[in-house]
Image 1 (cartoon, rainbow, N blue to C red):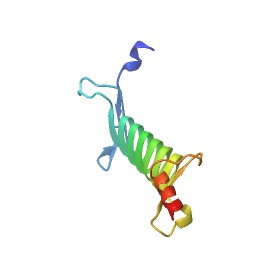
Image 2: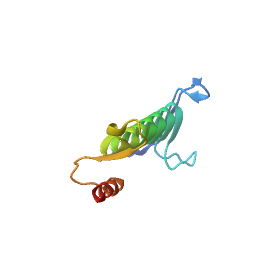
Image 3: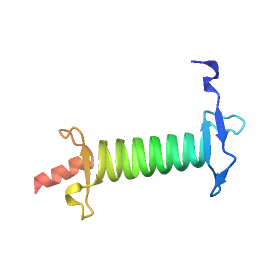
Amino acid sequence: MKADSRKPIRRRSDRTFAGLPLFDIAYGPDPDRDEPHGKARGIIAIGDEARGWLALGDSARGYIALGRNARGVIALGGKAVRIVALGGASIGFISLGGWAAGRDRDRWPGCRWSCRRRPVSRRVGACAERKSENNSV
């Protein structure tokens, strides 16, 4: 690994909209600000901990969030949570992933939720409980 690859990266736009910079990039620790990891906040936020309308990073929160832990209206990542969630483990109104929990397509008008896991041969958590309840009736 290069010696300067661990340097913190900080870039922020001078232009603002709705009180937020247009873009904010913050990666790595910053001893001057006493930050163990980069915290980016802006319309487009990129960093270790990103908060913005479009957030990209390890922990991303925004309307559109992409990252390891993603939370947003549209969330894509390892763990994705909110309305449209796509990821390894996803929970949302519309969800897709290795382990996904969301509205049941077969019972769309109702308020029932379903757990979908691929492959179907193994069910865990709430899915296993629902399966055992359905079999006992």
